[in-house]
Picture 1 (cartoon, rainbow, N blue to C red):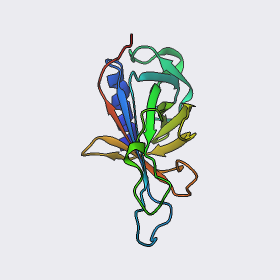
Picture 2: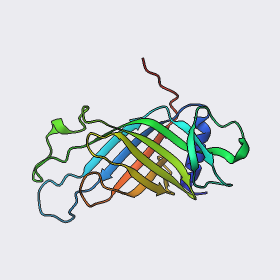
Picture 3: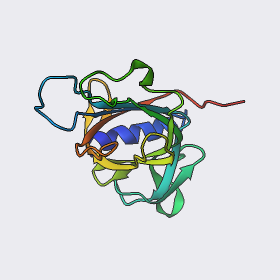
Picture 4: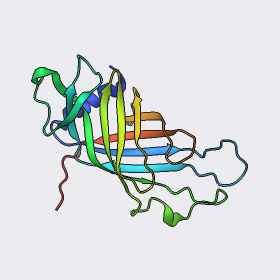
Length: 194
């Protein structure tokens, strides 16, 4: 078991008691390293979602890839029959915002354009077992900034902060550089709406 699969196993257990929430932080550097003087802003992203649910699917002994996973309305109640077991967490309504790099590479972006509330992207986020790793899938349902569908795996957890670390993500936008994501979970319970 890797630190990441141990992390997900524990969060699936806790999700059987209270629905978790998720926070995503994305960082991507300026596309050309070692350029001359001037402001070279990278790109950052922030997102959050509530009401995480347990996904079930077919899995062999120990952490392994999900097969035919589907959301589970409640929590685990012992080993289910037929080899159907919890295989991950699903967050159905995650909202994400990206910073605006600006049009001019020689000056900072207009502060009024940073993380605009109106420029909110919405996505599904899944965290599932993938062998000895955890797989992240971000699937956009409504994209305003970029169509940033992502699949990535990790075995890493930052131990002091207890967050999953995903490197080598596809870039947001047309830049050829890779991105980095930090995923945080919290034991918040279910949120409702009017």
